[in-house]
Length: 561
Image (cartoon, rainbow, N blue to C red; front, side, top):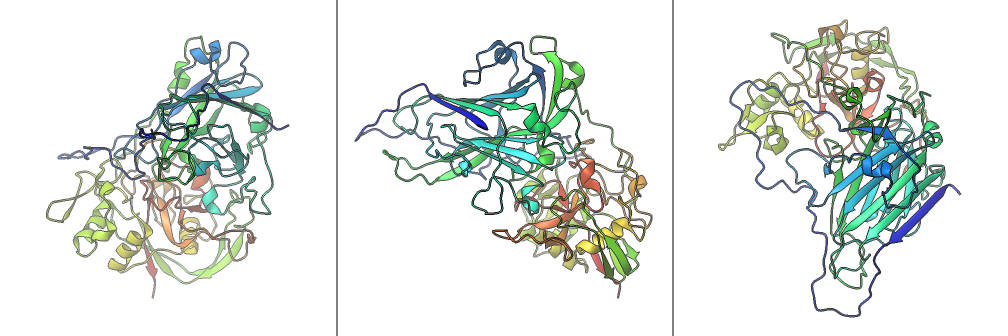
């Protein structure tokens, strides 16, 4: 038996035929509800963004056996620290949860253990069949990327009844992945986390809205062997200093106020996560929390070095006078495209393509340039209020309808925009967005470099990546990372949108089992958030949400004729 599941209800469910009191429901905020009274700061002097990185947690060893029963009462659990409470999935400014959600982690030689508490005044759940879409009602989810490479990652969803759906993805969902355990797709193979044990313990009445519940706890153990088989690097996971990318997600729905419940369709819902995604999508693996194993036990002195791992680094000095808007001519001819060796599906193998001469922007489009476009008139639809955030972007709309740049941010790449805004800007500037082939040719050159600068691995002197700095930087800040032709920042800083949806290369392996095509634009180059594997000039990424993100921008191209 691959799963051991245990559900415990600690208060009985009472059925009443009629009642004259109001039903108790979980009054959650809407997905896009703003934090009351929240405003972005008024900046009067040169501004340096506040650095950001995913949340971190050091996992310490157990001090005895753990019985997976949902109680979390063993000394190992009582001595383990809680994670921070969950927050809104996106970022500051959106309404934070009105209910507490926290987790803990411990480990021994055989298993890693997860335990947590969800405050919930109205516990409800009705899905009872495993390997169904549990997130169609309120649930809790654990995401695990053992190598931090967006490959072979795991998602485990379960509700207050302990109904579980465990899935693995060979690559990120938005890039044409065929998950395992999507049983409504005939070619999706069944898959389970081998040996996983899960217990859910509810503290209140389930599916009875006429009282106030406390909430529910979960406890889960996963054998290291089951996680190790998901690793492509082969590095040992259960050892001191080993790290994984893990996140916890709470999908919170309201249902209709009625008893007995006959309509289970949600009225409204919101996603609360431990480590925020910076956009509305839970599958952004590079934004998962960083979880580090320590050989110390939960009762020993905390490991100061691991608790303070992944410090920010000092950014390089900004360029003095970059010629923003200038372009570099790329000679036409036959060029190598691919392979994207981070894509295991066979959709992106090596091929050749012929292009004509073209020009590409020397730098990513800046906040200063985009503000001029907004002030040209008729472009208000391409501004979004969160662009006023000086940490992510820094374009402020004044009372008269004009736009100004936060002091010190004019040379940073513009972000927090959709592809419609990028295309409108390009048209206004007499340019267009590059094709996917043009972008890769500009980054790799005729010698088919692996990275814009050559074949040497990325480091902190060549690119802004992997949260080393914690935010975007002025364009052209890494001269050592430019291409020999003089194009800057084609690795890191912001992902650059391409006017094309993700699909297989014409010479790649086709997916015949898609229910629907990928809907979001391609992007290339990696961002300030991306691990080194995503900086390869062959890496094909995708904008992972319709919601604008502070890690996605663009540069322009135009024909040479």
